Length: 188
Ligand code: ADP
Ligand code: 5GP
Image (cartoon, rainbow, N blue to C red; front, side):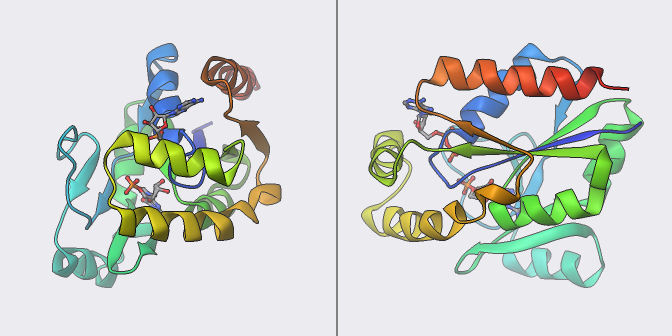
């Protein structure tokens, strides 16, 4: 059976860190590269972390039905899962791992049903979340404020996920996520 793992969390909770670790641990996983319209960060690569495209291109793709799901995660900033990406990964015989926002995760889980599990990475508190965003040095005061507001809303959806992993101690969170994925991969 084609399988997919959906990882979600409020921004700054540590999902990118955890997803990168899972990709190292499990060679059978392949990351679904989303399309997005936010500016590229210094340490990011187009076609590896995201397909960075213009808002016009993004809207064209919506019109052409190229997305399984898409969200305006922050005002004016669009992110979406491309059908082509999913087909590419399954054709390679790999298991997809998604890093998407909370609404996107719930939509993907509905779309894939039994083929997928949805894992919520939970920060220990909003204060810790804010500190992590600050220390990451990728955000301005304004974007941190937007992300924290969004996080309050996103935290209310945790119970809709198959699993919740609290990312307090990173090593433990990685171990727990690894166990969940191992179980899912090895089940029928
Ligand atoms: P997300 O992808 O959810 O936005 P990141 O993986 O970018 O989050 O993590 C946000 C920041 O917090 C990064 O600088 C990361 O190194 C750091 N971080 C992740 N997990 C932990 C943890 N358990 N303890 C302390 N810092 C962490
Ligand atoms: P960032 O700007 O920090 O890379 O991502 C912001 C948020 O957008 C994160 O919660 C990330 O998981 C989410 N995101 C990334 N790609 C997608 C996608 O394809 N669909 C949706 N719905 N959210 C996405």
